[in-house]
Length: 247
Ligand code: OAD
Image (cartoon, rainbow, N blue to C red; front, side, top):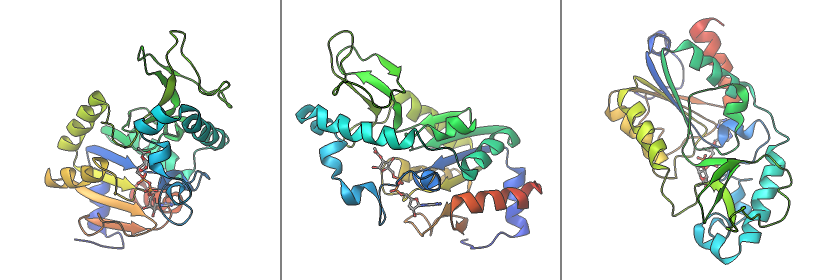
């Protein structure tokens, strides 16, 4: 099934679900003013990922990588959660079992009050020493001396997952467990190009979940989902919330 409107049957599926996973990507933060990666104004149209978001780039030129992350931290720290983030937070309180899996590193889900968050690509507000592996939260904007250095003398790196790196294993294990047991999955604002996150909806569907996609455009996932809602997440999610819960 692949619909563009919400029927009574899907409303009850959404309302009566017991175990829910929401997977989000950069699109949910677009209406907060944070650039996405792909698409016309996407970051990867202006910058080369392999020069900025890989372990090899950091090895070659840590200062360049840090300048880019410092610039992004500077943008993100002025931004606030939008209505889509808040509906996600409300959903956490409405469903008996709820897990948010986000590819976003911006911290806006936490800022909107969502609690059970799995950050599969890490967080831009974490920094980690490449020598002693200590990871700490750091909200300094600007970061200060570039590249920053740990007390142990090792270089500090952004606590995010780069291309060519594995997802944090504990986070991945928890994500797999949530996908195994969920009866409803929302996929919001992701182009579904980057693995393994792009496969999460397929896994949930194979495990029997009802899958809803919310995106401004069609994606490679669109033909597999049970319900496709096209439009900005900040408009669609509040509408959906009103329809499901008469909120
Ligand atoms: P992308 O930039 O690839 O995709 C953003 C998606 O959001 C697109 O499908 C847009 O159509 C959609 N979109 C844009 N604005 C929207 C809105 N207001 N409402 C709903 N949808 C909207 O971002 P991701 O899929 O998150 O990884 O990218 C995945 C990963 O690629 C990122 O986590 C990052 C990037 O390289 C790393 O840095 C490791």
